[in-house]
Length: 257
Image (cartoon, rainbow, N blue to C red):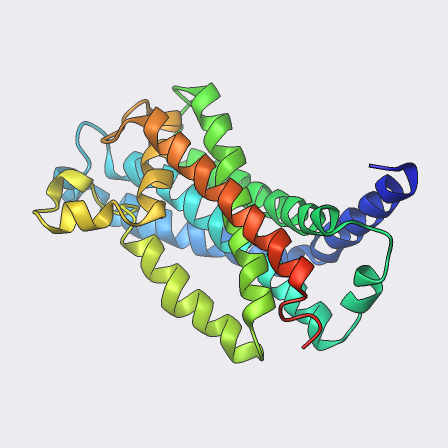
């Protein structure tokens, strides 16, 4: 990347990071309140009655990694999709498109800033969960690997969503009717072992299953799938989605029509 391109990339990345950092009440307060409620209800109030679906762990410990994934993917996806769509809606994304930045650099700036937001919210959720159930990561290297690839994948998907959306209702449809079902059928609140066939096999089509199980392995040292396979699947998906993002930017999909 040329010096001017690197400067432009840093400027775009900085603008996208400041966009959510300057609004902490909108960025961090809602997931903090929501997860306090999750841990209080599912962990403290109902947790002792749900131990049958959590193996050898307390239910609050079992759901902690899944809630971290929920916070990461929701915020990474929403940040990327809203930022792209808002820039299109108000036409200030044209300034980025006419800059000397390459399309790859533009996509990486949006993906990295959205991934950072997902990671910050994920860390916040983990910190809140730690207050209810002090869990030290059992497999920190695996935890780091999944913490990198998960937000990148969903930030990349958010870029596609932001390019596809024609109005604000499209963003609601993406979040409520696609993202939420994937999360809630991704094993956040239950063990995969409780699923009979063919639901167990069908659940393997949901990328959230690999994310939740992999994060659970990083935090608790417990998994129901091969964590190396999960990491390989998610890495391949993330690279494929990033390639699609760059291709869509090059075509001008949603940007010039």
